[in-house]
Length: 124
Image 1 (cartoon, helix red, strand yellow):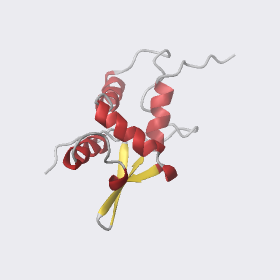
Image 2 (cartoon, rainbow, N blue to C red):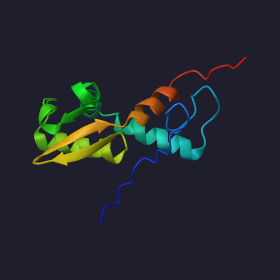
Image 3 (tube, rainbow, N blue to C red):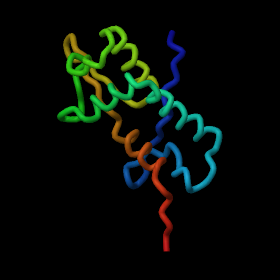
Image 4 (tube, helix red, strand yellow):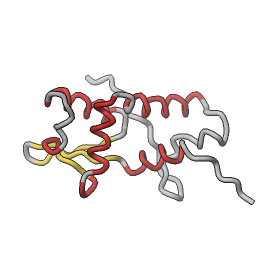
């Protein structure tokens, strides 16, 4: 039985952004928001994971076969381990096709992370 905890990305709001957290400049985070953001950034805090995440996100068609993203300076089992950690953090989804696994970045995750790091808009 797995004891992994998947990042709780909720339904998207009207702009298609998962309501992970408000922009840092909008208001202080709640404990839950801070936990969610920390898990996302902790998963990306490893240089190999960040390279893998970038490789998947920038791959043609928005998805990458594990066979296409293994050249990051570590062994294939280590690549699989890091992809698993990114998936457990809710940053990637995967689909098995035959013997290969294809990974995609959750669009709502990129939008939520981008929103988190932007300045809150000032409505007139």
